[in-house]
Length: 213
Image (tube, rainbow, N blue to C red; front, side):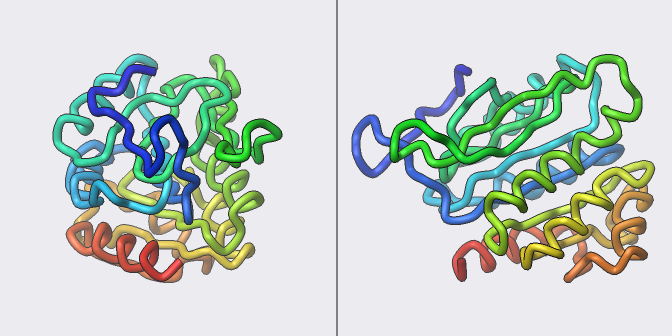
């Protein structure tokens, strides 16, 4: 993966293990919302960021490039077996699900991302957000932060439950700032959302939680 920005670390050539992981799920209205969230994360952000934007293959790479330009963090598409690193935001490619795993490799590469082909399966495509959230919660436990933004359907509801059940924090975008409130509403109605916030408050709250991790 070629990110526009250089990934920095405390020691040359070393990967900075994340203190926490932020999983952001979005669909319709997501690109606009993400443009108000990712640029607010500081360069020294101590969490890894994974974004699952429900979007056709190819378009996620373009979106990641646009957000890389706007953000202090490097932003790009994830690759197979890519180490998770603090202060880097990675998008799930449009036709793949992200699976978060513990690494058996180098000590500084504690967590890696695996990609699973979602193919043409509508069901698998709808579960992409749930897959990333659930597998992250299984690895990071209470250090997982789930964020569900504007979108159609019930995508992310089960993933938010997994994060909630593992003691992590869950945040949903509120109705007034959502273009489509279906996804946040489904998670809220399921009783798995800790905080419902307007879009402009979400990044600040994430920064607070990461600072407390």
